Length: 292
Image (cartoon, rainbow, N blue to C red; front, side):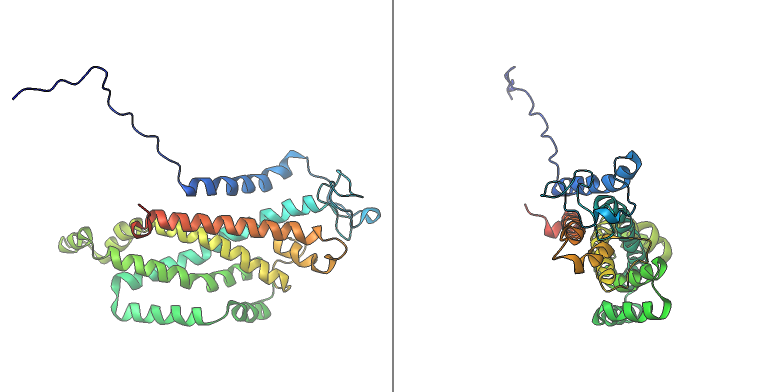
């Protein structure tokens, strides 16, 4: 056989640069928002948040009658809206993160047990999931808060009870598929214990799905807290969140629309970005949803 020599001009194709996924481009603005609300208070650039009854309901700096000493205006007590907005953003993001954790934890555990053991365990947990999803979250929240009062621990309890079911349902579905893979069957044949199979082998394979669910749950927690704060059942003063700022500005829309507008806009933008990021992560970790 004759060997075919390659032309010296022929070079191996350079590896293509890895394209950044949509998840990356969605994570960038979220990171910017998070960094801004946590770093800005440390810079000393924010206006004083004290009351100034001589400067109540001042419009944002770019509007007529406004002042750049208060870039987003002032509220009915003369407090700077920008400073309150940044401070409230920190608590809102913390509530979103902690709310996601307290929901994803029990939801993942129950879904994992239901999907792996099946049988009566699956039937019992599925009944609990259906029962929880059938109850409006506002009824659960009203029952708990009216009994325990408004506080952050009670709010996290509400977020846990209203969010675990969706996480459990998705985790159960993913576990049902993983338990039938060859490596799980091999582990059973080798005599590995059920606990080792579940927590050392199946759970790590669910990491991508869990991260995606947690991301989606952040947006849900922020919306739930905002809805409860709008009803006067959310965070307790002197703590403030974007939801409580939105609630405090609802009666000022005709005179000072900016008090409610900026928190409402921030909630909308952050929740949309987080939900899109969660969808992108779910698509990335589920081959059936990937577009070829």
